Image (tube, rainbow, N blue to C red):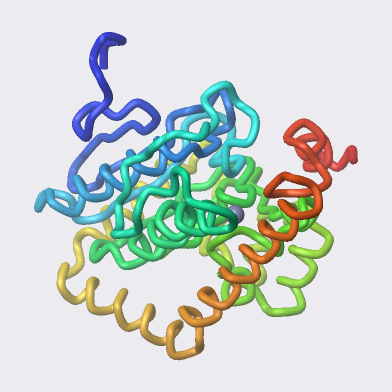
Length: 290
Ligand code: ZN
């Protein structure tokens, strides 16, 4: 894309898209800020998923991140972080702008976080998260919606937002991805979980040496893409169904309201959606310095 052209579905700004031999490679492309996510990136991601779904030549979708890290989470501190502005809405929630009180953030996050993640989990083609380095908070949301998580040996996973007075990220899959005791630890202590532990607990499918990650993901993606496509779609639906019968959908709905009680409480007490740490202090705490 040249600098003069406006980003659109064919020329995304924060995402790169490539199809190679039946595999769509959808890459978060903000390595200078560790692929932190603003709403424009998430909308572009949704558009690129749509592009991959619509292309019959695509048999498997890989979601990765350019640079050292998969994703450091929602963008809290970069110059391109979200400001109070209109965004393209992907679901049928109204605009959040000028909504009073707690409604503003609730409407926004129903669409941009919970709604988009749920819809991505239901993509009818197989998806693989290719994770290296940091996979933090909002980064977990993107990895968790994929069917498989293939991780480099330097990957780590963390949800530190309890330190900001919020009970975990908006897509509350923690206690479905991990045993409840470990989910408590992940949230309450907010520490980095090394990839070896995530693998032992079944949250990660494979650990691959960092330099071999793309190659191994490509091999698995092509293998997945060679299976009967409709059978794969139905298998995805079957697993999603089992998770929902175990209460995933309703647990997430309930937790989403706790998440927004926390945002509203923080607003009342401090005037901010999150309490305690600002972006800089959070980054420091994330590195174990705070
Ligand atoms: Zn939130």
